[in-house]
Length: 263
Image (cartoon, rainbow, N blue to C red):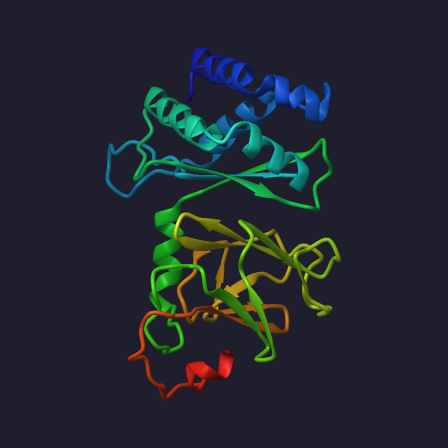
């Protein structure tokens, strides 16, 4: 159980960091302390006992904070180090409660257009557990070797439409406020999100009812690799990173055909 003094300390530190921003965005409807308290609750409810006897409970190492897109962008713009700061606080909280963290916790601020401006969600998860359950059956389509740069990253939608991934955040869904709008009744209004993080793209399921699948496996979060096949409803997309520097890449014998067919 996390002691009250540690909870109070997290609430105070978070309030000092972002309270003025919260007042500007929410008025008095949401306080920084509200998010701090929900993070604590998610850590406690998500902790599980390992198989080894007398081993300490294992705390979740991933925390997704869902916010209205305007709120999320404002927080990131005004407080770019907020995720890192919250990560440090969560490490301290886990230590104070006697929890074990298998990895440094990761805090992600997600844009969720289905949320009102004065609402937020917090969801905790164990990254190692989810990776073990999903990556065993993941197999990407065979493609020519891709370069490390993301300058040529794109989605090929239903083998017809090519969409370059240029923005830091790309929302995908049926509603017109998404960057990629899919006219597929099996797709949720706000179905998925792709975020650029350093030199990689991360795909998130945005709590859609039908789920988000990569290479036939349902995911909640997945680091995209060139050739990954994404399924949203009845729509299929292939994530590709063009290799502009490798002239030796030739045609390959797979379901996608030559790389030139996507250009």
